[in-house]
Length: 200
Image (cartoon, rainbow, N blue to C red):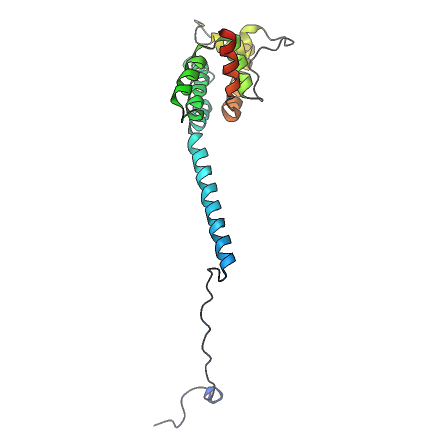
């Protein structure tokens, strides 16, 4: 058995298929758009590189905050390390901010290491507008429970009274201030220059 006409719809027999147009290029066709695209690509690369450098430079902040998050305020060893964490963070911030100038970094490292007591607390507050380590004269908090007092005394107190509610509250406040300082500090070169001028 044979068929005279092709199998299927006889109305479609005489239709001529149209050819599909060429694919449209996503690359700009005019010279001005090409230049604009190149400039835009360069800006995106520059912004990405800058963001990556900032992320890398802030690695010390992330590590310090991670340690602080794991710190237990019921563990004496952890509590005693809080002042050291803050000092180490300040020294690492100095290295990052003066990575190009090793002489300035070493000089500033030595100056930061020598700060103690009220001058250390005042320096911390100058580097971060949101922190409050210096003892507020209007505060009724005893000096040994103030942020400044705790920073100075925690490593040296023979026995920490962890069960004391006032001490526990003061520790929580200190941890909060350390966290704020780690997140928001911006090292200001003028502070240590002025400090060295006063010492000379």
